[in-house]
Length: 516
Image (cartoon, rainbow, N blue to C red; front, side, top):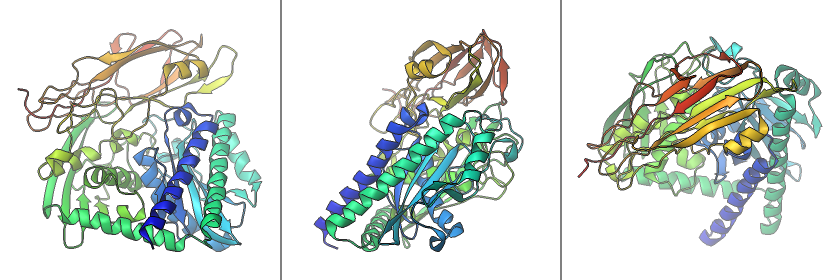
């Protein structure tokens, strides 16, 4: 395919998936989608291979969505799919690792033939069950499990499924508002793809897809071959809700003959009784993100560029969750996955790596009834600590690395649920010292305006351990979590009195290089 023609059509594809994402954010009910960007949209070819992704989104959703589409059309095969159908699932092992993340897949028809699929994954406010915390004892306590089904059939809602979802969640209007946003964005993507085919006189996108994916895979394998062959090791330790110390170990093998990278997590901590276990799709998502970030971040992220990066983990491992392990707070461990990988690579490409950061975002969910008796469930609001220092720059403060989501503005939260924030400010000098300092954490305080008891699911980490510095840099400060001025580290949902106050102090990132 002509290079100029390919570049023009590639720009068209990026515009399509980015418009999907913008429309989804504009229509969504949930603040974490609308304000924080906790979402992913992507375009797939007729075989279910990811061709293009939007320029916004979080790695845990984007790269999990890349795997989900192909699996969904293996269960409901193309010959059973008709115009107006929309597929749905929140199967943790198939999509983004917990029930809150629901994936919708919309087939795109052209002349009665499926030419591709528009997909989206977003975090939903509520899915029934325990909530977003880590306290459930098995996955069946965590909420409603939706297998691969048709959410819409030939433009008509699947009435039985809609009733089941509505009856099993606390805030059905919000859930269906967000599901409606996903459905609309998928239809918009299909319309735009057909318009592009009209513009360039294409009957399908098979040739275009093959060209993009093949070129992306070749470019990634070529970039891997430029690295020194061998096996490199990394290890990270961090504490999770309840105080347990988790260890992640990696052996990163660079195979320059095949142009492949294998990441082996043997030696990592075993499964947890808490809901912090991570399915392999989510582990793979953050592993590939770490490699792509240092290898070729400007290259398209699609099935081709992801293919040469492979992972393996023991069956009895916290990042290879087996049924029926609880997984609702899987990000508490999953967002630490890049750090041991980056440590392993620091010995061969130090100029592209960074020190450990604060790790997982601190996720807070509040539930209860307002003064009018109406139920509310906050869409998770996330707060980050400091990012680790980079090779030539300081770490960014209060920045969600590696997830990339924004914090929902406190004004939006105060307008949408009965909450009042008492403080939100940076914590100076909590980043590790070095030639380049780590990013600082932040302090956030809040109380509820319900006049009645309310429920709190809080998932802080790094209250004991510190983000390690790199190449002589000092570690960042640990975090702290207080309820009414007293330290707390509970791995369960807590019932709070109407006047209880919460204060969070997130960790700092590690420094890089010895301070002069």
